[in-house]
Structure formats: structure tokens, C-alpha cells
Length: 216
Image (cartoon, rainbow, N blue to C red; front, side, top):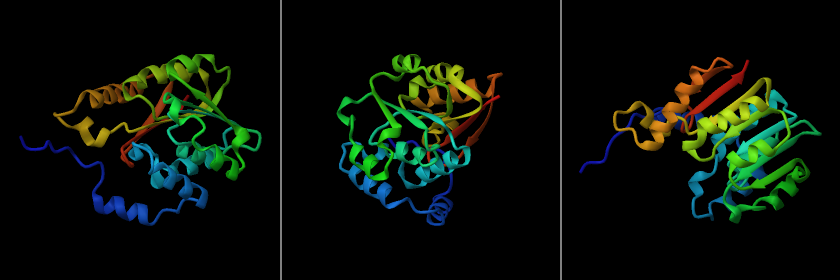
């Protein structure tokens, strides 16, 4: 059976051009990237291109509090933390207990280890226990749970707060008749957000697709 073909999110040429002319990550991020390549799922790292965007958005927003769903090795955590206020905190949740404290040494080198609060477990169970109001939320965890995560974090967002959801175009599958179950779930999430009365949103064809959501 021939391999199914899905729409390109962007052309490879444009993608390469944009990456080549974007700012390079810091040496500490490059070190963490190299460490992450030794894991059994290195493709799960946010990576330099997406990481640069997360860092840029965080620096523009200057958040006091950030929530990250899906820590993995902490690359995205470090990128998001680059825009934190001096007394800010980033709460990050990872389901895989084997990754607990993976990047602590790198966080220490970056001088932000005291600004990171790490939780291990199911994000849907942990989010309600965090008594905090968030300026910025990054969702990059279990794709089938995106609507649940959104419903849990929105009441904890400040007015004007930003939610960034990753992988929402799912390798282009969301625009294909051959969309798989994960892609169908992400399509449902995108439509759910777009119809929600409490937010405004824009879908961006960047990397594997980003959904940028602002609480009104």
C-alpha cells in the first residue's frame, strides 16, 4: 500500500530559509539540545526554531507566572523562562517520572533553577491543585487531552493571558481526508477554541502548527 501523503505545513525551502535567518539559541540551550538527543524520543524536544519563538513571545509578554504542560527534557521550559520577570515562576508538568530533574544542572547554569516548580504526574489532575493565576501557558502534552487542558487552565488565566498550543496541525493531517485519530482530536480542539466566546485565536503554520490563544 503506498504511503499516504499529507499537505505540507510550509514548503521545505521556506522552512529552511526561515530557520537559517532566525536567531541562534544560547549556548546553554545548545547544550540541553545535545543532551536531549540521547533520549529515546529526541523528536519530542521543542527545538531551536520553536524554542526561539517561545523565548521571543515570553520576552514580549514578560510574564510573572507561566504554566507548561509537557516538560520532556526542559528545553521549552528554559526558552519560556527567558522572558520571566525576576521574581517570576514557571510551573512545569511532566508525566514521565524518569525525566524528573533531567535538566536541573542546566537550569542551575542558567541561574533559573529557583524559578522552576516541577510536577510529575497527570496534568489533568495536577492543574486544579496549583493555586496560581497564569500570564502564559504552553500546552505540549497528551494531544487527545487538549480540550480538557484548555478548559482547566482558562479559568486560571489573567485577562489578556496567552495560551500557546503546539502540534495543532499534526504534520498537515488536520487538513487531510486521511486524518488519523490524534489529528481528529486536534482538529476538534482547534474548532473548539475558535468557537469559544472567552478567547480570540490565530492558527499559525509554524513548525508542526501553533495555536495562539488570548483570553479576552
